[in-house]
Image (cartoon, rainbow, N blue to C red):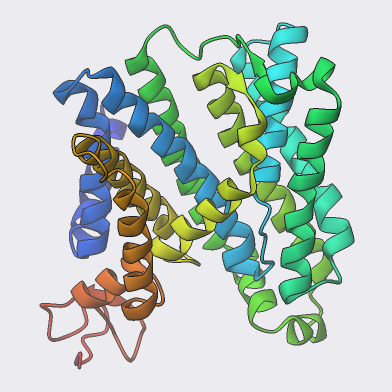
Length: 353
C-alpha cells in the first residue's frame, strides 16, 4: 500500500510540474483520452474503420520521419517497407498458419531486412540521387509482384488473412494502443543520445565524422528502425483488411506519407502523427459530404492540395510546430518551454520576451 501511495504521489507530481504546465503536453493528454473514449461514444463501424486506418498510417508517417526527418536521408519509396511487411505477414499467416501475434513481428523483421537492402547501396548517395534511388525500389518490387502471381496473388493480392481480434472495437483498441506505444518509443529514440547523433548527421555529416561518429552505422540503424516500425504498420494493415495487395507498394502511398509528415511537422514524430489524424479523417468526411452533390466529389483533392499549399506557404515547419510556437515560449537562458501566458521562466525565473 505504501508503494502504491508513492507511485500515486510521483504521478501527481509529474502531472502538476511537467504536463499541466505546458499547453502542448495537455493537448497530447486530451488527444489520448479522446482516442480511448471514441468507442464509448460511437460504435459505428465506418467511423472506427477510418480511425483504425488513421492509426496505422500514423505509425507509417512517424517511421518515415524517424529516417528522413531526423537523418536527412530523403526516402521517396517508404511504401517499400510497408508493402514488404504486409506480404511477408500475409504469406506467413496463409501458408504457415502463423497467428497475427507472430506474423506481424516477423513481417516487421522483413521490413528491417529491407531497410538493410535499401540502406547499404544508398549510403554514399545524397539529395535527389538518394530520393530517386529509394523511389525505384518499390517500383521494382511491384513489377516482381505482377511477375509471380502464384506467390503474390498478382493484381488481386493475398486475401483471407486471420482477423486481429473478434470485433471492430477490439481492433480499434489494439491498433490505437500500439500506435500510441510505438509513437512513444520512436519519440524516446529521437530524444536519446541516438537522436542527437541522427540530428548531427542531418545537419553536417562531415562534422559528425570528424567528431568520431560512425555515420555509416547510424544511417543503417535509421533505415532498419524505420523499416521495423513501418513493417509493424504494414502487418497491422494486412491483418485488419485481411488483404495484402499491390496498393501497399504504390508510389502514391509513399508521397502521401511525405505529405502527412510535412503538413504535421517534420523532425518531431508527433507532428506526422498529428498530420495523419487531421488530414485522413478530414478527407474521408469531405468525401462523404461531397458525394451528396453531383459533380463535387472531385473538389476533395483541390481542397486537400489547398490545405497543403497553405501549410507550406505560411507554416513551412508544419502545423504542429507553428501552433506550439504560438502557445508556448522558449526561455532564452535555459531553453525550457513555458506557456505563452507566463512572463518569467518556470525553471530559472528569467524574463521571457
